[in-house]
Image (cartoon, rainbow, N blue to C red; front, top):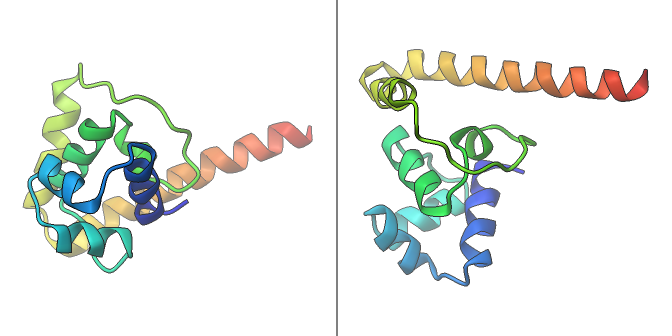
Length: 117
């Protein structure tokens, strides 16, 4: 499931309109619509707000087929690192996203291999 699909699903589970989610995360309805229709990606700060709003992990939101887990914010160093991503160039951000996707794929592949064995 993509990021767009996940936030739409989380929002509808709460029976929220896009307006409600927009208010909760400090943006407008148009932005929420763009996120849910996969027309734009939110900033890292907004991803953190969405995760906090729905109490889901950030990796669940960003990595396809990642298991849904509650948000745990007891490690401020992780939050600081996530917020620092905004200071990077788009090329550097894209590299980080590719690394995250690669690690998620590697873990999924390990899971499939262990099921086959």
